Length: 176
Image (tube, one colour):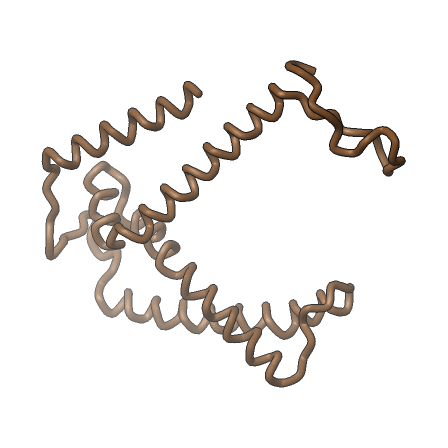
């Protein structure tokens, strides 16, 4: 109960299940700042993922000491998430074309969603993982402790500047 009382989320005159929720100016300000921080993290993450080449990210992670198997796993997850998203959309469209209603929010509808969307997605994912495993084994992934790279990257002045700018912005957000 800090700040000025601005009103109620559920007015006291209208009986609602539970209690009325008061809205204070301080709570509204803190909530807005928290939403802004979350939005900045989401937008920053989106920009990072869309502008950074996965191979360069893996190389940078290994250069700072992350084992290349862990770095590759992280990069692989970033690469496969959009692929699985499009695969899920394709499976759902195929099921709708077959006349299966998977959008009903009942226990039976949830079961249909699991049965007709999730199970084909798991089967598709396992087939992709199997193909990826065969490809990695054929290329000798994990044969040596240190990985070699075709291209190497160098830490330049612009990298130091942008890293400092990012750290400064992050500190500024934490202070707010």
